Image 1: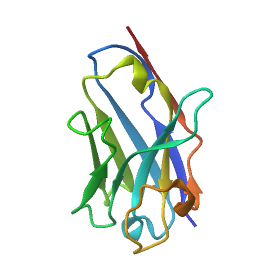
Image 2: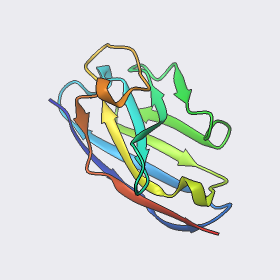
Image 3: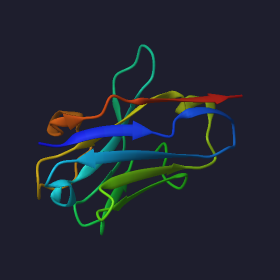
Length: 125
């Protein structure tokens, strides 16, 4: 079992940066692939980024590639999402999610059984 708590959201102007953190509790965090997803009002939850359990491979949605970076610190049981050059269309509730231990990272939210409560990111124009 993995419990996840996101932090770091807020209001930022377009072009600015934020770093989201996701603190995990549970014995198996270091073996869980992790993902970040987001959901804007009236839209479906969409994939943002994912990282494998070792941190050696990461994946990004085309809309954030080159602007966002996912990373993890297994010693701190934390995964991060560094967001640069933010745009108004990045406004959403951002969720971190954990997949079952040693599975591959995935862009499909249905393959993540563990979710945080979400943190709001608002980018003003």
